[in-house]
Image (cartoon, rainbow, N blue to C red):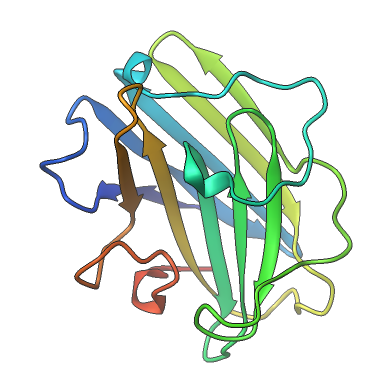
Length: 178
């Protein structure tokens, strides 16, 4: 079953109203399939140039970055996937809320593809879920993004913003169920 989603900026007044972020996600057994679309005035967004050899990198969230968080419903551990429009990526596992961050082992190839077109950037992901995560385990999922404008201003986009500050790790923002 595929679920469509739309992301909203943390402070709707500070993000470009000419941008739209949305997509769809679904799960096929042990695979997470995600399609994310950034549309509108994307010329106002700082989009790192595609690289010939994408690599696993830390700190991708400091500029334009797309993220996916998931956890088994009712369990404390969760995963954070960071995807750069340049092609760089990282996948982390956390033991609990912002605790025990470490790279998830078993991944060494870029898991996503980025397509740029006039007025649109599309990211497609087909990610095998981490070993030990049962294919039938019900997942809670959060989709988020950091958007850096060419001016350097950052905006924070998510399915929901349950706290007084942008916090992509907040489980109340993991609104999708797979």
